[in-house]
Length: 521
Image (cartoon, rainbow, N blue to C red; front, side, top):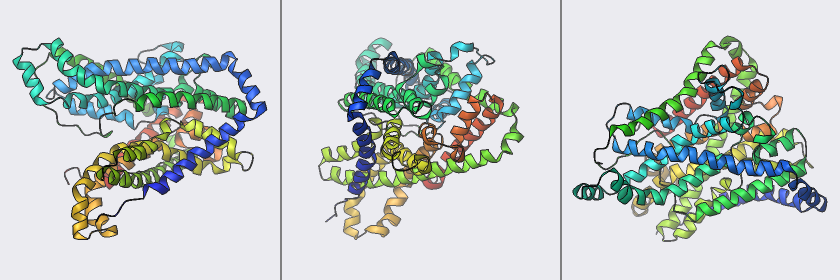
């Protein structure tokens, strides 16, 4: 008899505490009589209404500009599997998943700023700059999420369409659109949620109060105005908005399982299509490559020696690596504990409970990091100096941010592995450390490596929570880069951004290859 896996329940208890305590702090202050009066007065102000509606407007527009072009691009990738540079372009489209937001902001300024290759001048700051940066991040993500939809269409459907003489329009209408109709709403809502909770992009490219979102308004209320009541109202608004979007998402079918790594997937043989479909692929490749190339050129022309000789840079590197590696280790262990129980429940036919455990790991989509940070600030500030607790807070919130990625990358491999090998291990008496060493680790190490690499790169480049709690003594690389941009030290910022980008990619590669091993193993 196979023993039940109960490793998820202590993790779920910790998740409930990590999310429930900050929310209790927010709701407790919001329920106060004086706070309630201040909240209503603040809601009547133009500032909060503008922040609310601009958050929704920019997220909606960013989603449309990112996802709609991704449809013909994914279609071209699906139809043309033999064109030159296809694999290299797919790898390029995987890079934005691990590039820090603040690095992309500097690349966007380098290309589209007043002295850039395609100058927009002052009109870059505001909605234009926000849209450019959001499309950079989310267009490749949407392509990688939509591409498996074409690969999921059975081969005999394509063959039947050929026999019936389907042209491009009829093929799209009768074969491709039914698959798109199932997956597209989930992709749209995922990208909308990512744009709605975007912080670094709006903070640096917003350009003023007219382009302020709820996330940025929360940060400004706590760090600059020191108005906790206003921050609570904004945080509760952001929480309600994210919960509403998440509720719509849960009613839709799940997203296709896609590794956010750099590997490609097998696909059925599709009919021949016009080479004109490759034009949007080329344009998207140039769009993604331009900010990165411009940033690296600016860094090469910058004060490289002076920046590398600055002790503050290496202190920030140490802090960033400590946060990234700690969050990766904690998120991977917590995700593994959750998946052990959920895969066990799924194998026993309790699919609803299994989905509930995995959904709980994605609570960060409903309660954004800055909302959690605000709740912790309100909860802890009357009792302790929160700035002395910056690293536990930042590591904890980044762990929560990384959990959904661990579930998505490790989950499919874990479910497949347990379904295939649980009965065999039970019959051989393999359990505990011996099973882990002989069976689990060799078969799951690649998924473990990808999960840890992704979380480490995301935590290493995160600006949101450290901007709220960071001090001059606890500056990380993203915060140092933001401070250099704010002081108009653009040359130093370009070099620091190149260091941060190189560090993220190197750490991703080392963890993916070090933990994951060779791909042919």
